[in-house]
Amino acid sequence: MRNIAVGIFMAISAIACRNNKPDSIDKAEAANKKVVSVSADDLRFVVQAASGGMMEVELGRMAREQSSSQAVKDFGQTMIDDHSAANGELRNMAATKGITLPQKPGEEHQEMINKLAAKKGNDFDRAYIDMMVTDHEEDIDAYVNELKTGNDMKIKTWVEQKLPTLRHHQEMAEQLQKQQLK
Image (tube, rainbow, N blue to C red):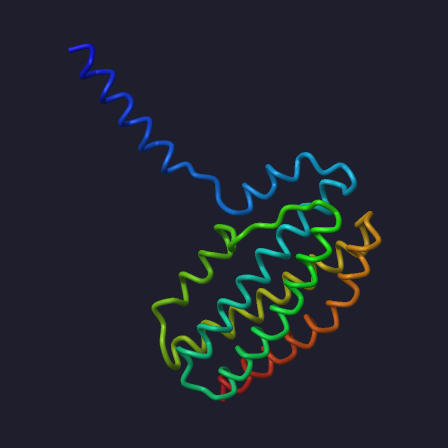
């Protein structure tokens, strides 16, 4: 009887451990606890920016495949191109500072991907563009905040270089949103 109880306990423990796996951001943040050359706030920003950038690329791919609008498909390709380039620059900068970046989008960003995965055509277009407007507003706020409060000059320089592109993306998304309302 004791062996059965121990076996049940071990099985329940194994299931619980699998359900509590840290997401990609948690893993990166845990690895970054050893990084002392960059402040905790700067580290958090870089990790979130990497996760968000990966989400933008994945959503851009989805737009290319699931949209019914050539303008939305083109916007998706712009997201792929611009965010892939920015992600590469961020990876290179992070490597020089010993910062570990997530390997895939974190849970919050993955949820956004999952929300759009089943949509197609006009339903996808509306949801994607609305998401892009909101997401770029939040990204711009986070980037501006990093410029104001960040401590690391390399990170701040990268942010300063990326802000015009994010603002351009925001304008493009807002314009597409207006076109959809017609």
